[in-house]
Amino acid sequence: VDNEILSEKFRFTGDAKLGIGADSPAVPLDFGIIGDLSGSDQILGLRTNANSRFGIGTEIQNMAFYVPSDLNSTSGFVFGTMSTADGTTFAEKVRIDIDGNVGIGTELPGSKLEVTGGQIRGYSGGVSSPAYSFTDATTTGMSRPTANSLNLVTNGAERMRINADGAFGLS
Image 1: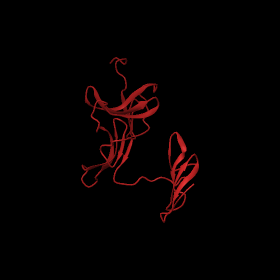
Image 2 (image 1 turned 30 degrees about the vertical axis):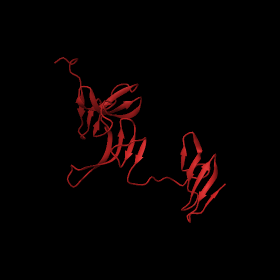
Image 3 (image 1 turned 60 degrees about the vertical axis):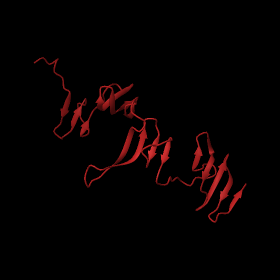
């Protein structure tokens, strides 16, 4: 047999680890490092046809999950839970569509973040660092200065407060 023709493609170790592209698998299924990590490298791919693939890979040393961009707008990544009672009932919890919209509790997010059927909670924040602020104005927003109260802040100063009894004050 010509040794130049034969080369190891995978390795199964005595401690039940499978290495594909890995000489010494470190975990039960180890794909090793495929490519030089200088660009995009697919580690695991699933294809529905020759041009449509779903997969996991690397994108300049970041982990990348991808879906085909030619799918309709309801497609994307879906995260959910599978019933342990029957092993077939899937309950969607979060979706990231191909436009980058994130839906929690909805299968059709219409904006960058859409939450349906629940609350969004944040920390209390303060005047200099409101809990809900803006990217270009981090000292402007809304926070909770005391229990059951709400304030609006601009330029790092409290401008309005609504107390638990409904009374409000402006500054």
